[in-house]
Length: 277
Length: 88
Image (cartoon, rainbow over all chains, first blue to last red; front, side, top):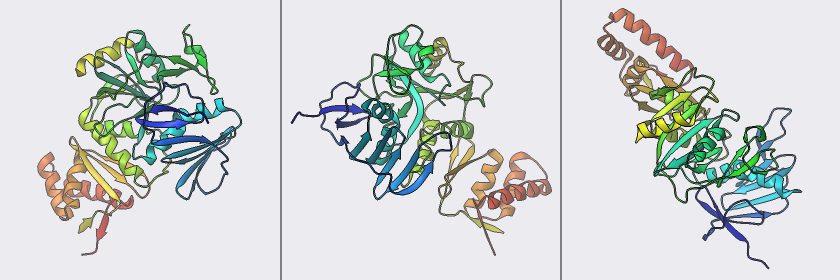
């Protein structure tokens, strides 16, 4: 029987039955991703409103994530994948399903990307379409390295933990860059990555509530961060407290800015990073 | 009148403001600097009159005005289940 590949995603090494667009890792693996049958059983935690088709359930110790194209049963050490098409499963595993794996390991995540240069990272948070990935790509064009795209996970020291070594972007925003289309309809643009977690120098929150670029402090900064929690569904005990502590810890330790969606330029991001250093 | 903080309410000062978490309902609240002054007095078990005195001293307003403002803040906090009113 062939040995399964080991990969690392947001600090967790794992084996996978699915072919993944991730580099190999030496392990040791603490999580396994296996193919199998997953039934839509358990207490309903959340049902997406129509026309979206997604349900989240708790079945004993596991969380069952149910889309029309794939179903996942997530325990902290084991993810069972039930999908007809591996590509559909991969597009959901990275990073949506992985956010639930991280929650099972005690980590909360924010909806954001991060890039690093000279040992310092800048994170850009915001809803889908706010311009996170476009901002990351403009920095990568200037020699920055991608830490993560879409899901921002932090370690106990508040450093941004590396995610997949690519940026996913809508084809109309690819601006001539070459990338592999994924099942979610986006292009995966490969980018130089960071092997280790990187301290955050600044966070920018892209949101309609801001009419201009400005620093945020105190409760306004905390509220802006809490508005960017990756998954608001409570799948594990103590999550709301952890999210609260995560946001307040960042307010205490990292400069935070607000800006309108799609308003960031690479010049602005580099100015922010330079000011923080 | 005195007040207590329910067990599922967590709070932390951020700069001179206050963030509150209602862990039971997964809801967050922010209090401005005045609200934070009121909260710090009431959460420590001291009465509403002390909170009004603190606000009057800090913002140089009349005791009557401070008391009315504090009463309005407290009504809001109690109404949202962030504070319990103690009957004593």
